[in-house]
Image (cartoon, rainbow, N blue to C red; front, top):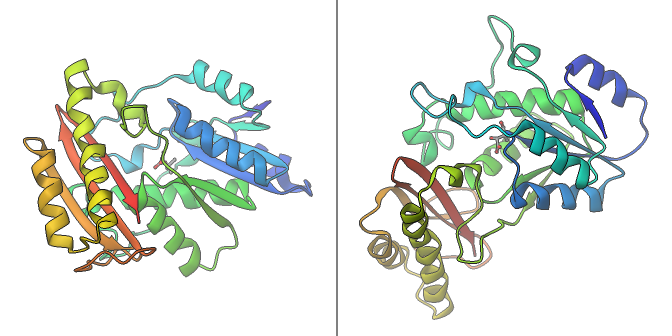
Length: 273
Ligand code: PAF
């Protein structure tokens, strides 16, 4: 596995490769969820590039940028064992300069849900993803469905800016108890981990209601909120795949999303129906 930290060196290295390139952008602290993205990229491409970059611009003031789990050596090891060809490991100064051109998230879809409680978060995500895609110029890029709003906005950016990369959505990986894998799970105490199971339990109950033909969004949200109580709820929403509110679940076109605070940790999850 080749490790490159300079964007220009990586661009130069990839320039004359005539192979399909699968790209998995990450912020490090890799877990099974990331490994499943890498596996998918390996299945579908000849060359796999992973980036590990803790992007400062997607954190708001007072968020966990300084405490975000950092596991550089373990990440390198995981990438090597997973058969990654190139690990891109830049520093902030390799990616950002002064007086930057930035991408603005769309004014509606970028500022609801997570974007409502974290305004400017998606500006930072879209800007760094645009930079990374321009550096790697991949055939396909892989993102987890767990970050459904991020996935939706990146797909929108690629479409609206006429970019040619294919965005591939990969299923969420869960612990045996149902908790969706996330680097931020590392913040949870044993008790909080137990509390966090309410999130997947609420989504499970939503999918059971739908399987019993209870499709009314309000009824589903009410039941989910009961299960999540007494956790602090940022949102529970039933949306279509364009992230618009719908009064009833539309099978094949619905995503049900939850974000809650467990202790001091924000956790999000969703199901696609
Ligand atoms: O999902 C993440 O880990 C990050 O938001 C991403 C896409 C790597 C951009 O920093």
